[in-house]
Length: 348
Image 1 (spheres, rainbow, N blue to C red):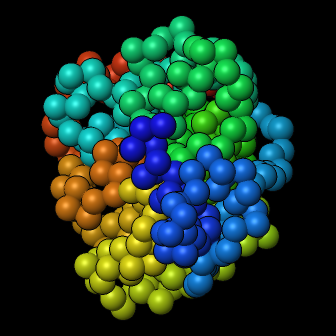
Image 2: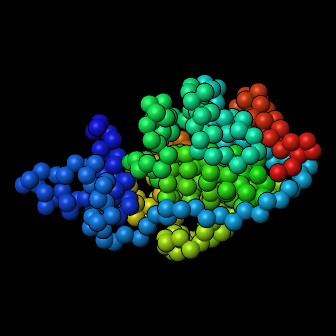
Image 3: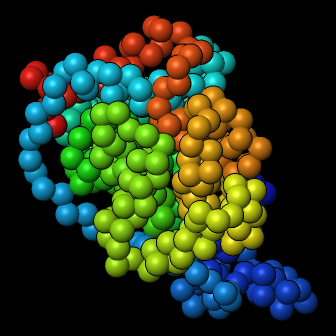
């Protein structure tokens, strides 16, 4: 077991509320138990206090199966704004170096067609296109297990509530313009490598993106995210705490104060944990509504956590700025793929 894996595992155990620090302090005389043993008995380990964010284990999304006919012209301009904002958010260098696939492999998901993804189908496609697979710990770990013919689906791993699936979620919102269907597709994709909040956050982002109007404002994005949090299985423990956390800083405090709230509330969590990263995206859209996607990227970079993923998702929600700052070919190819995913006539 590498030291990185151990460090990540301890941080994820802490995020789940396991008081491993107390065990470490009381086990100094005899040695700290191996992480593998802690994982096997984690349900009986002491819970840390206070612990406000218990993670959901199952995703329950009611998705009406319906076709929504979409005008091709309006869909093209809408997708151009969404994808353009995402590309501007991660920066020209990332786009021009062909790194979009390694950031969120949107094109891989678009190639899955409009059928709801299953973990088996997703990972099989990853295995066929290894150089395009998202360069995040969870995806790389799952792909390695798959290649080694080891049991991988549903296995606990230290990046299981990460933000990697949230990076991919905006494209599901673009493919499925019915929010519940977008959330269900994003959740199916997320189950490939994630559990708990890693699935929930992806479903929230997809739901919110899918419901964005044709000419949305930054305030629309904030409202859609808050609305999605209450519609993606609101019975899950912790949803009320998330709303309380945001409402205590909305709208009186500043962006700097919001970052401090997150850094305090999530101290000890993995840097790519989906909850603090989703809340950073929500906050930057609220406190910097006049900033373009490129500027949002700079602001988020200073905030830390999953910088690249947050820049991508926040940029998509903000939408393409007046100056593209990206090659037209990079944007047009992605937009045409989104429109093509809706079939002829375009529908979801």
